[in-house]
Image (tube, rainbow, N blue to C red; front, side):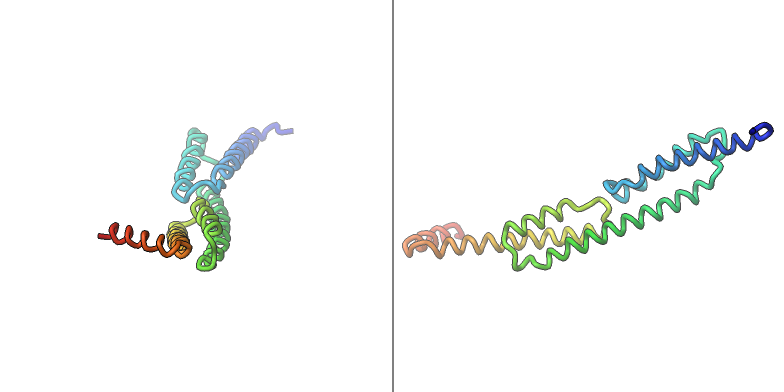
Length: 169
């Protein structure tokens, strides 16, 4: 059937080889655990691997265009995931002034476990919100200590204030 089409068959086999490699590379690149910097490194590794696989031949398909399209798709997906996560996380932090310690700690833990797909600007916003959680926890601790102070007897309050004055001097 393919008699006389040896070059076409060879070209077809090269296309299949490149497509299989590109599919493998897409799987490596489409990893939400990678930071933006790590993603760039993996992209360079994939491009280098492609060059090494076709050291004797030029890849039959336009690798530069294909990688550009792959990265446009992956970066768009990462941006959507990051935007959704930021929107959800920041919505919870708006309630901080009214939340108790357990809820604030839960929000802080969620913020500390931010996904790798966040941009540096988004990471800065998250760090600001983590600091807001810390401030709220400090406020709650002071309120708790003051409530305990109020529960002391008059004698206990006087002893505490005396010790506090000695501590501050």
